[in-house]
Image 1 (tube, rainbow over the protein chains, first blue to last red):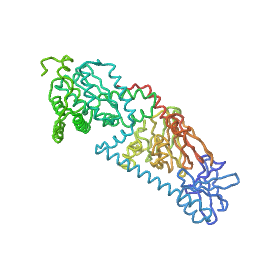
Image 2: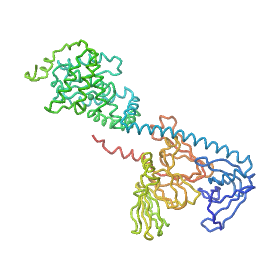
Image 3: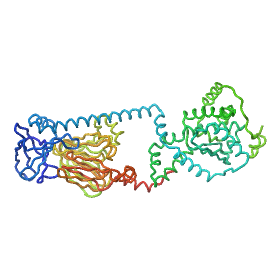
Image 4: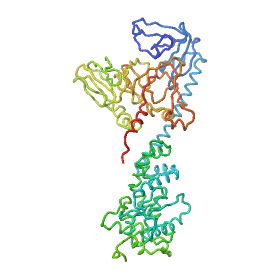
Length: 382
Length: 227
Ligand SMILES: [Zn+2]
């Protein structure tokens, strides 16, 4: 009866596939292997092997086990040893040519472990950056992800949402309002010739006070917003702001932030049956997208510069923002997606004061006519 | 400890008889019923931070439950979350198994559970995540699968190819390489065939007859997209 616990597994034709537990002793001349009685109650038996009978290699899942093979009475036998004490004893007792493959394997295991440690510390470092990034609300990661999304994808995304949306709207095909908005967009986009986007604009007949720009450059202006404006410059201010949300890819940044990069990747990889659903969901997200404070500031300041370059009076933008924020009459949809703050108008004023004075060029249309064509009551006209 | 599998098939339970003072570790939530002599403790293995990082990195259960027969002998009924078979192994101190993280149901006190980080390529391509459980020590180990459990016995040097999402557990005497199932990387990523493991014996490989990921995808198509 053997009291001690097994320290190795022996494989061979007469044993089960999980191997027979056995106790291995290293001696001067070789190994002694003691098999344990199995469940049938057979007596334990021992076997002695000379080192010269063995072939040795390293094996197992992590290549850290000693594998010894030899040919016994009943065919090929394989021994798996993982106890580090026994492996050490083997390396001391066995002749050099036998332990050489072990030394080599040990060196390989060390190298592999080192490489794993290095890879994992790089990953750990990257994870730490991610966590810190999220912790400090940095948008660096989101921007990194957004940078990888091709413009073509962005355009597809914006276009399908744009057409879906317009299908249920009363679209204004022509008239002074359409002409006026087209002129504004033309003046503004003339100052951004290197943009990868081709901007498209539609005027929608609706009392909703709103205007939005979808990723890829699809712009919608509601007549409700135009009615609230006292000049073309005021509407141009909103458009300059919207154009810059497109140019800075703020919409995509919000999507990536809200739905996760995975959603975008699943679109990019093109998982056909799921694509429609994701697209639809994204469309809904796009329409109700609430921009962040940093994005608003960025769109404000770059919008102001764009107005300036286009020689459109930028003070219209500021007065319009202030008026929209102050007036409590009715709901201003635009503010629900572009959160307004006093600091925004103040920052714009400071920025404008710092810019050198220049002569502005008026629009060719008469704003009074534009509003009259929308059926605005005469009394509100100046 | 005596163990018995009740209702073998898709919806089994395992009954464990504990002697007074004996205890087992179980996947949290696995306990179905027990004698009044059994106390249930939720313990965070590896301390709070260890448990937390495991939770975040692997999505693994935050707690293991410890069921202890502190007030006399008693029995415990355990069941896994998913429909599928339970298999009970007896660890003898030398046989060790790697178990994918959803495969663990319960283990005797003498069973040592080790969360192990895999190499980058195995973690990325293997499908069982960056962490797997290494089971060593002595005593009863209950594993559960999604679908039926099938045991593959490998002789020394014998090879077998397994789709990685069907893996449940494998002995540490085996080795495996991850290979593409189809030719071409793009095909591998999009066909859903993904990657396979080429196992090399000696040792045992336990596989499950259903693929949880594919099943999830199949179910998902019936769930309407919320507006
Ligand atoms: Zn805005």
